[in-house]
Length: 77
Image (cartoon, rainbow, N blue to C red; front, top):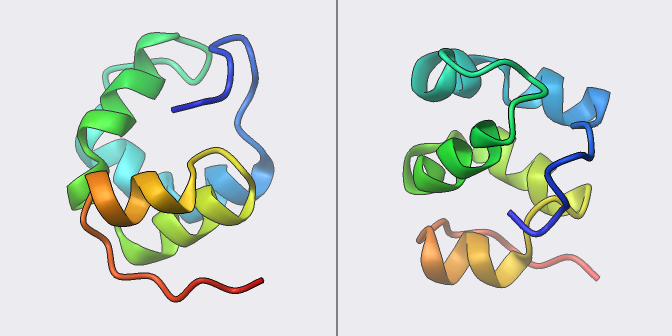
């Protein structure tokens, strides 16, 4: 992800991605720098709600979510 590893996830991301975190990256603490790498690796399998929230909060770019991860999102400007 593009945000520095010292940055904390927002409450919106924590809420939207809670189940994805538990499913794919639950072995990492929320402040562990490895969590961002794990979530990035799990990107193609993340729920749509989580991905939309990651994009809307600036944690992940629209291009990464759609091109690298393969999610189909409608771009809102």
